[in-house]
Length: 124
Image (cartoon, rainbow, N blue to C red; front, side):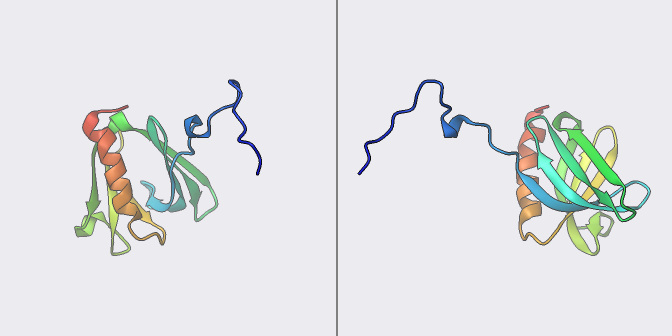
């Protein structure tokens, strides 16, 4: 059995290293109606959407937590994507953004829960 190795004071402690921001596979619609498939990342100060529209164009959208006025799961007809519930982000600057999940049961509710904390606290 090997003796336990002690860490030098210059070696980082794994628990203190920054974790990768959570990333989710999502779809969303642009104002012109184009559908975008990509990812949603929860960064320390903002939500970042990064993906590609059907025509191949890259689309990046960043929303600060301070710009979000409400977060919920939409269940009424105007807040559905392809007939399914969507995550609704109400943004002070850009209006409403609908986000659908891509095959991960429960991911929209998890996102709504995670995003509700910074919105309620005014983090941003």
